[in-house]
Image 1 (cartoon, helix red, strand yellow):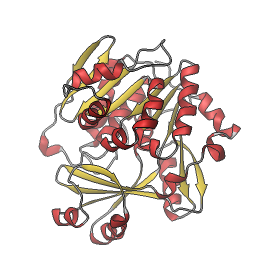
Image 2 (tube, rainbow, N blue to C red; image 1 turned 90 degrees about the horizontal axis):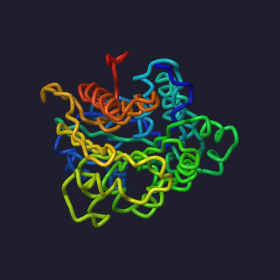
Image 3 (cartoon, rainbow, N blue to C red; image 1 turned 120 degrees about the vertical axis):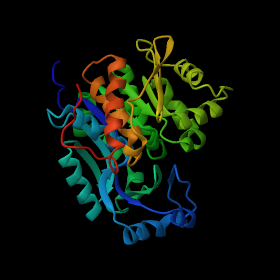
Length: 345
């Protein structure tokens, strides 16, 4: 198999410094959090970030959904370094410096847009048992500017260099115009544009920008909860996940040379994917429930594993197998972290 070239994978999203800690139910209740959810921080959550750092043993990692995925793809591939480019906005501060260092350690070619009006974004992962409640304070991540970064020739060249593009749905809340520019480039050049439903609130409250990008989406990822919310918002009138996948596949598409592929994960249950005109179930890797440390990052790592096979021109079945492998490794560890080398054949 030829080794992938540098910058073949392009990701763009919200770079966040992950702050993860084990908390108790009282902590969740105090800040009105559900045990398993992902939300954007409101004013009432501002104190949460200071408190989680003070009261618990905390781990810091370079995070944000898209950055996690490209980091995992790089880890799966190992060599060459800088297989993935990543764009996003950070602050000129201590957390930003940690993020730059962490991205470099992960061998990701991170080209951040740096500004000094907002601090680097953070994401608190509040872990209780097998559950994780994510509270993201986007801060600087919200300040990404197409005309100040993506449109610069030196940056756009990196977009053109890529063959596969991945942007999590979360970035729809920040710069839909940047997503559209990249998506159209992929479509016009018959390259592969991938997106993720990311969270129920995206399908609910960012429906318009999501559906503007959808015609350019070649591969759509999501989990069972996000799929159900998307179906409801689209008026599919079914809660059968296979049927939702089929209806999503059949939504209008710009580049007709590629049939849309829809991939829905369901935790420990089978992953559902559209293969040509069929919907197929792919069983996940068996795991003892006692080995699960933290499901935070399982979805991101599935995508990362999938992308690592995709950029090596592997068939869909192989991409899903690689995704299942990566997710299986990551859920046995705290946060979206991984051992030095993968053991995937």
